[in-house]
Image (cartoon, rainbow, N blue to C red; front, side, top):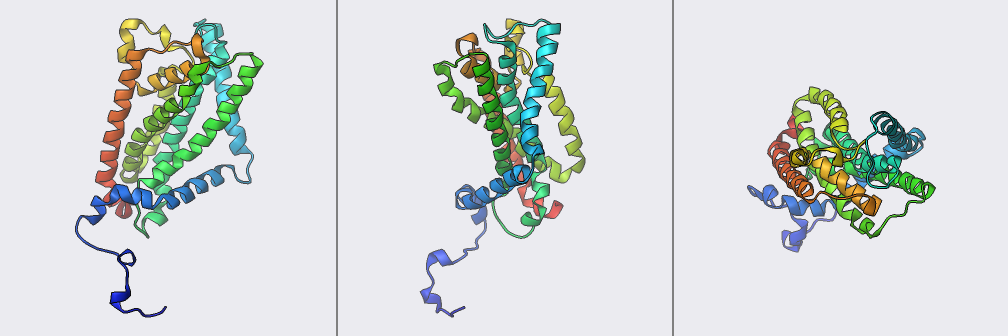
Length: 284
């Protein structure tokens, strides 16, 4: 290393240490560490899919098998109606897209900090990058499931309408719906390791109380605002409205309530994560 006189150093070369500087520049650091985010996201995707068959197969079988089971139970046995004229399997699969995305994101995010313990203990970076990067894997699963949906739509000769243009908005809404609880769960899981056993049970319960296997229109109108407090309801209804077009109708009041809950939980999740972030290195 060549010695340089202090006057030759540029400001960019210096690491400035002052009280509160990390807090003040935290959100700017997220952008500065964007390459680390890309590396972590690619690592998680590679671990799931590189040199493996079960990763891709599971991403295909999981929504397909769930669709078949729900179609038999809710359509054949319970004889619940579909969304308009849409085939029941398409309606179920359209609901499976956001649910699979959100449940996968929550499961992966809950253990993300513990899985990166060696990295957290060695170098500073905004820890928020780690759980957010894991959601990229869930997004890849979403793309695979969407490809299956396209094949089924061709099979049923069911074409989407202009509503599909709004699908990116509801994908973003699904991302926010998973990020808020994901930040909350991953911060709790660092301190309470047995919390990871609660999450699978909560997701299993959420699968049946959310309108994945049935249309939310079967809920009596007077109860739909209360039912929409489940934020996933608005996301699923939005996906179906985009994919099934005129065969599906969106409940505006319920969507507004779900969006309010999603934003509220997201803000609380960020607050909880930031409050406990300083202790991650010690607890892990």
